[in-house]
Length: 109
Picture 1 (cartoon, one colour):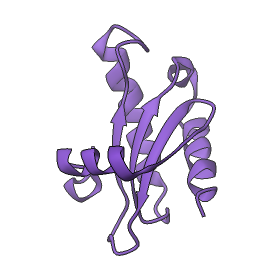
Picture 2 (cartoon, one colour):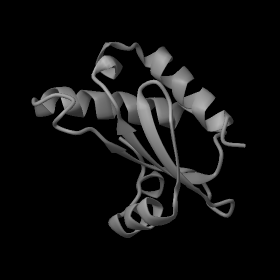
Picture 3 (cartoon, helix red, strand yellow):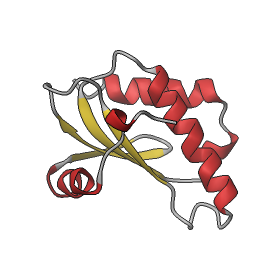
Picture 4 (cartoon, helix red, strand yellow):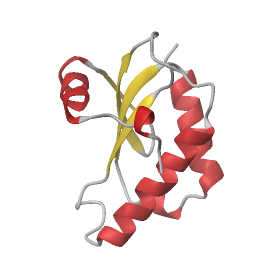
């Protein structure tokens, strides 16, 4: 589970949705807002019912993504909203998810 300081609240999600920069990878849509004065990056993960109808599967995907994000300690200081594009994420190993997130975040600079 992410620490409270690493999670976005609803007002931050709204702000990122309105002002954030959007880009995509093979498995994720990512919106972010750069905030260099943050202690650590913040994240919200969105997995739609269109991806899978069972909440158990959607929650497993969220847990994997959050764990991968948490393992990236020296990431860019920003606020992120990750939306899963397709069910392929469910079949990816943890290392593959982490590498995709790492590559995506490094490309932001």
